[in-house]
Image (cartoon, rainbow, N blue to C red):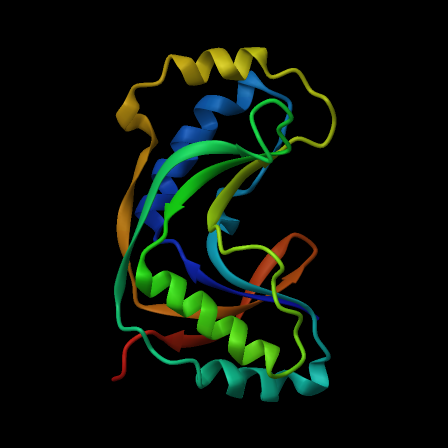
Length: 182
């Protein structure tokens, strides 16, 4: 099983992202991410044995609850950089609560043998991937014409995170973990 933890993005924000992507899609031959799959990843777990799923769920249930917090989706960019782009993304503003949730999830899964990330926590929404050297001139022209507020996608309240199964390009929620004590 290929697993990860993430925060779900609400439908109204996905609609704004879909409109944005639909406007850009004709300008470049990129591999565009299905908007319904977008999420704020907090930990990539990777391959996990189904026989140990109960143990993983118990560890995630023990992650300290930071309380409900706001997540702002704003801005766009490229990884690793705009000169040699491979990933086109929308930005997630990192606040203390999101950073703590990611760190606590990292700790809980590391205790089970999941490798720790060797890079810092930089959440983003992957809008597209550049698999081959597709020309980007037309896309860059479209991006230059955008108004500054066109990449202000919105803010939402994160109330829980989920354990997801990734299989065949589909993401399935396996369990929800509330961010505030009931």
